[in-house]
Length: 390
Image 1 (tube, rainbow, N blue to C red):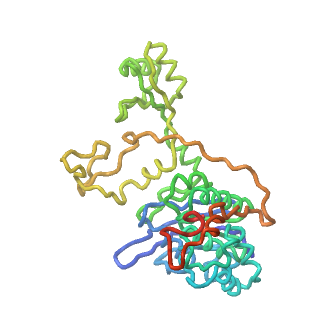
Image 2: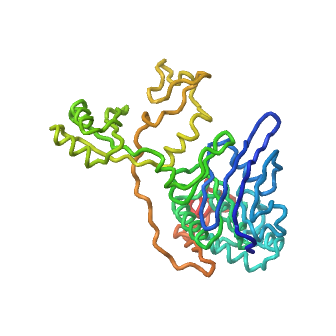
Image 3: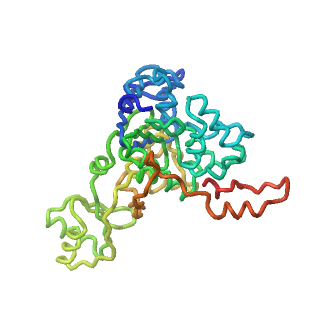
């Protein structure tokens, strides 16, 4: 059921638990047709915000709206919003299919919807298995199937990749992107920054319950200076040559290389050639979401004390101690450059009528497991039948 625009609006949302302010004046908007990542360290207020948005926690101030209405005013919210805040709400003795049929009856959809969503999330062959025997990854899939029962316009998911193996994470990425391409709204909370970077269109980054950034990834990366990291044979000579060419953004990183801002690798190499300086290594540093995340949430929960080194020397890559005596995380110039990993590209697929791809599961090792039944009463640690989450 698609009522209104599918837009999520959070306006000046605040929540206090006694003397503790979990969320403070938080504001952002999630537009239809996009996957939005809701990011922040543990304790930043992400889950509290989602619970307020879904009507499970009453805000101290502010409001969260879906389709211009508070969650409680949506009529049959299960047909508008599909939400997963934790993947543990299953009766351990009830099969996956029967669990979904109970929810289907509650929101007024036919029993056949249970089989449909089980196929979508890759649990079709596990429909008769008891939910209590599922691995964490399988429970995540069953929770997602529950959220999809009403064919919702809006998906709100808290840590949806938790427990999934790499193949399952790749499938989830494709699923969420294709779901959003239908004009639906997807909001996911996560701390898996590298994974979110490949999935989302825009991000909301929070720290200490406040909005630190809201916007697209491209805008976030564009706000940072790109750098060229170079290992010259003579650093002083190269610095002199670059300064003669008008380059001023030069600094030395902890591993001895020079970090040069404002020009590309070709210009650095040309300056080195003119100066007769050999280059042993050159790299254009890629600004990734994880590095920017640490800059924006700098120091909310710093685990190291004033002197983390047991031998008495402070960590050379930590920032200066703050007023409380604790070392802050490294500044951008002190961080090691991020490694470049090619992002996975998934070819276009022919999806079911709803437009999103079913998971191709179970894998071959699941079938082999069914042929090799252990003796009665024996439980192998980690046994879930889907490779620990698939």
